[in-house]
Image 1: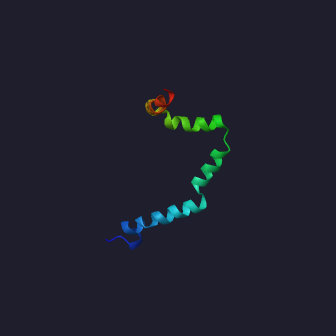
Image 2: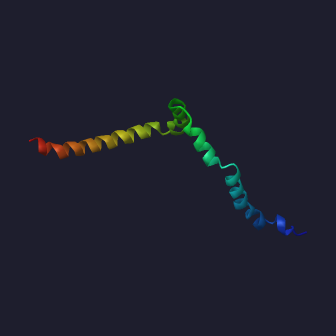
Image 3: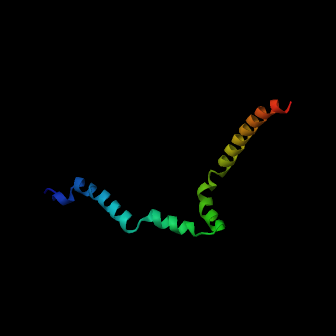
Length: 84
């Protein structure tokens, strides 16, 4: 027995983009999230974002320290000749 055309994999796959477009138009999760996040007080906003970056927090701090040291060294090298 052969599957009807409406049940075949090719026809099911073409429904995905249509369903995605419909979802974006009707519930628009990006807009909803943006609106809800914009009304949060700063401490609650940080509370939402902190768990996302918590896993990489040490890496972010170390990269910031290294970049800060590099920029600081460049500034010292650039202004040291001007001070003599």
